[in-house]
Length: 348
Image (tube, rainbow, N blue to C red; front, side, top):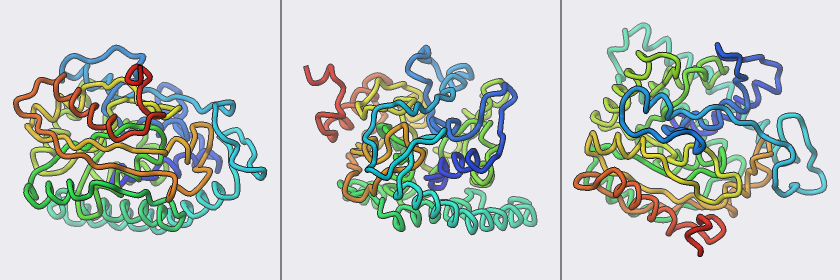
């Protein structure tokens, strides 16, 4: 979101639901606040069978299905002024956050429309890496984080500075733990506006107002799980971006950890990184499950003091097996997490 998936795009997804849009896929699965949940992940839901190859079926299962947000899910109430709704809890801060997202969404929409006209007039011969929509979408997300005092603290930025200065033409796979929808703008904030990056998303999200425009205009990898041709194209597009020096961002757990504890990893991203020979940069995201619990429509409080992102050193994929690479990345992420976000088995 980001540039893709542009950070915070999930906000307008949920807003589209609250404002009366009825969006459904061909399988009559609701496309609204729940649809965005795992749209940027390259991995299947942990209850699904793990993929073993980078073939079309592997990538098809890599996009998780929609989940639902329970109003009874565990989470703090957000103060005496908080209240429940059909789509999640709200309080004054959450309402402010949503309002700012809508207001900023208006120029975002205009900017994306101008980009589409530009590409049509030029026949897509200019800006082939889609940097213009990336910039506009990233600016929207970062403005929202700043205006809502939700920009996270970032540690280990020297690791990014080192990688970008030494390998400024080389892509990386950014991999992070996933606790909340806030992880998406946090990831965008960490990678930075100067870098071009893409997410993998479900084709159904094309139907979501503004979000669908941003995904399509920004050149993000889109996957229709019902189409073998789409699956093959998604593999090709993802590898093409990496080979062309464009970063990919993903969450290997494949779904949000509602209690904040890291879940088992799926290996889709590590297979892609190995195939192209790019490094993986692990990110530890701390506290986003507390700032935005799964049963809230928007964050219940500012993330400025509650959340942090730790950037670890890049891990080369060359010379490592898929499982070895996955284990090294997961160990790095876990080492940056507090005890209450580490897997229970790691504490015993």
